[in-house]
Image 1: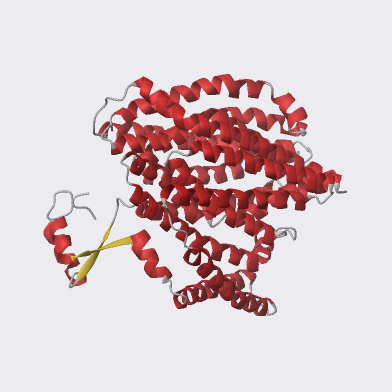
Image 2 (image 1 turned 135 degrees about the horizontal axis):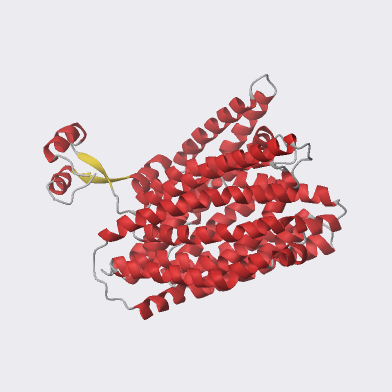
Length: 560
């Protein structure tokens, strides 16, 4: 967008007596802010979607849907995950090296690879759905939904490859719009499909939907949303790709080699990890039954854990997932340019942000999670096992960010081995503790916690070793932890006091959260970290002098 320079300077004069502020649109953290804003909306929509599914379909149907999605993730890792991730990183590297026009052929090659893998793996999976439903998942009701994930995967492939193009070229706004549209369509689709199905059942005096039918309707809603997202991103890519600049000298053979160098280790590790994770998910209901719980009760507990409690704990990922999304292509570009100091500095900031956001978020969930679960789902079982789940989620945040740094600097193979090893630890704990020792769900939780701790610890060790990053445990962990615990005690006391009075639960929770975050920033400041100043300096704005502003505004490339 072009601006009149005189008008711009006149309008900004009051703020420029000594210095002024300007958006640093080339910063990783600017794009994280942009994605975070949309991700907050997306997480809230996704959370509402989960609540909607819990009330429309029920916990047992959500459990069947969870089994179907575990199979979907396995097929996804075989056909798409590695290819899409490689596009994001390679596109960023090509752009940094001045090979912008080569990105067009990169997208074509990636789509051809995806379509080939889809025909080889996804289509036979759909044809053999009965075998997978009965023998692998152990739930015959899931076979209809398993068939429907095949067209869903086809659409997801086009969506994710083009989404990777936008992330790799630093265009974060189109994927943000696409994901929001997709979630809105999922909500609208679920409402429409379940409403139509229930009207049909009432008109024909038939019983309620079975768990398998409800899971199939959920997948149908996914297909509708994927159509909208895939069409939107593909169409926009056609326009944006025409404006790519630079050379087109990278050969197709080199593109295939570049894709293989990233996609093969990532796909193999993701496949093995998801196979183990999916086996773990299939074993959880069986471990619960082995511990003495009936089938329906086991499926309900599994559905509450995976479809209600965990999504509630993952709400803070609305702020942290964009960090990981933007880190990968940007660090790949810095690696191609051999800017090791930039990688080290930004990796340190990323780890700091995980602590500043993740630790207080998990503390809030610990003190208010059960009340929030009861308010949202009207299910007394939501919010159980919160301490273990909060620890698993927090360790997972550190693990994900550190792993993203490592993969972006070319250590995919190490991360792949670690992913598989961590998944095996979780599976063994479910088998031994949950099954053999009859601890039920606690065996699964112990395995997940141990897996997350091993992954985050080893990844941090490698980040320090290969980037030269200095561990700053006091800033990254101790200060936000102490401030969170102190503020949490006050907030918990206030919540209990308000709960004893005739005050709406939603108002009590909102007031408790406000008090917590106010106290958290105060205690953090007393410990030496100004949360708002740090956020401004790293995420929002870049401070520049008046002279620099004038010089930049006179440049033909000036932007706001």
